[in-house]
Length: 355
Image (cartoon, rainbow, N blue to C red):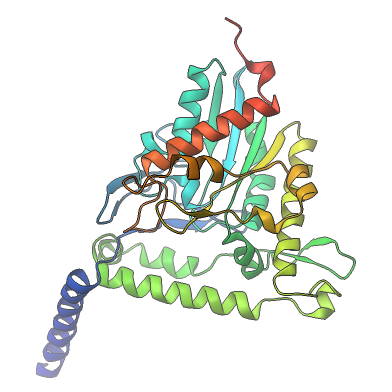
């Protein structure tokens, strides 16, 4: 009995010491992710979840509705007459991590479009960690039920490796996009089981030590999976003539398929990039990795010019002490840019209320 008590004391002591050490010498953001399995084999947000995200720069509450969206309302599948529906798929950037709902891209886009005479409903189906492959599957199985007029996929440089790592799709020797795996649910079963326990939920929302260990382990596992799941010649033929060719070709094929099924369901399709931050005044777009005709065909947009123009050493477009998501100002810039691009496409012209 004494040995057991000693072991318990030692574990508690190590945890408390480790927690204090991390908080003092390596403060770690508390960014819990409540995701579970969707019926169609990829992740979705846990319905009706509510949790806090805390970083040295911000503290926000994430609220998920019964449909698994970050929203304070529910959405019927059938849209209202004479109203435009814009469907957004993305990862934590489109979910609006690190900002309040009122400061998120989704919320701002809907509010500003309606204020400018475009009666639009913006539906946010983003899930933290999503790659293009998961967005495509979710669109096919769920998104089209909402009768969208416009479908927008978020694009980020991490999508290149995310799409390879998931192995949901591959390009075969005939250069065709084929479904390869039925599902991609990394650690979901164990996470669902652990989430039943109050202690686990407390840890992920309050322990910086646990958060630091989890993030380090996740990065390592992602890197290993991305490396070992690079296709071999038997699957891809001769597409790997130089480094990173396959991830780009796979991503293009996924976006082309998303556009095909969107257009086939009377919806316009585009991809909106979130550039990478180098500093407060320097950003990198990865759309240059795609041929100009491909970018044009897929309606790929990037706000990098607007970000550079608005950049100021005294102003943050991205948070710097959390997980580098867009600040309220960054989301506002993204919204203004994208509304200008939407107007240029004329996708919403039939919905404009004439004054």
